[in-house]
Structure formats: structure tokens, C-alpha cells
Amino acid sequence: MIEVAIIRPGPIQGDMVHPYLNRRAGKEPVTYFDPRLEPVLGRTLGVPLFQEQMLKIAMIMADFSGNEAEELRRALSFHRSEERMERVSVKLRAAMERKNVPPDKIDKIIHSITSFALYGFPESHAISFAILAYASAYRNRMRSVLRFWLMRARI
Image (tube, rainbow, N blue to C red; front, top):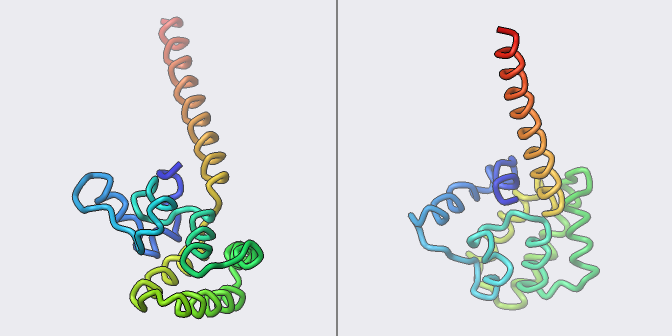
């Protein structure tokens, strides 16, 4: 599923592709915005790729409630509304400042979330798309093999 999520414009614009690929290849160490995010980002090598991860980051780093996380989810998916995303970003930044999160970490988290908002999607969508892509590729491959053998049979 990661392979499907990583080729979207959101991760590309958010500078998430190269860190993931380098970490996966062992060329750079896996790092996290904050150690508290390791359980959330461990599977994706410290790179946020899915909507669910963005919500958990907000809940952990800014103590967002379920309702506030839902507000963030809506901002992430509401027709890519910049105005709505800006309101939630301001709220998220203020909450992280109250929790004494260092400014550089706040900036990285906000950058990831706002980049994600452009084209990100839930993990369930990545799973569905991966299944469809695999089935389509398999079908096309089998069709080619069948066509090959049918052509040989005519000779």
C-alpha cells in the first residue's frame, strides 16, 4: 500500500518520497518528528503517508480530541479547501505551542499535513487501489499469454 500512497502528488510535494526510499534502502536512518510518533509512523519509516497517520499525529502532538481530529480530517478531504485547512493549521500550531513542541518540529509537522492535504487519502483507498492495480495487471498479463498461445496454435 505504501507504494501506491507514495506516488501521489501530496507526498511528492511534501518532500516525503526521497526520505522514504532512502530509509527503505538503508541509505539514511529512520527518524521521526518526535519519539512519541514512532508507533504511528514506524511502518512507513517515519514518513506520514496516510490520512489516519495525520490524525494520530495531531492527537499525540497537539492533544487534539476526537472532534478536533474529525475537523482536521474534514479539512484534509473537503474539496481541498485552503481556507478550511488554514483554520485547522492555526489551531494545530497553537495547540502544539501550548504543549511546548519545539518550533522546528511544529513547522515540519504543519508542512507535512498541509502538503498531504493537497492529495492525500486514507489507507483504505490505497489498499483498494493496490488490489485493483494488481488485478488489472494480472488480467492483462494473462490475456497476453493467452493471445500468444492462440497465435501459436494457428501456425
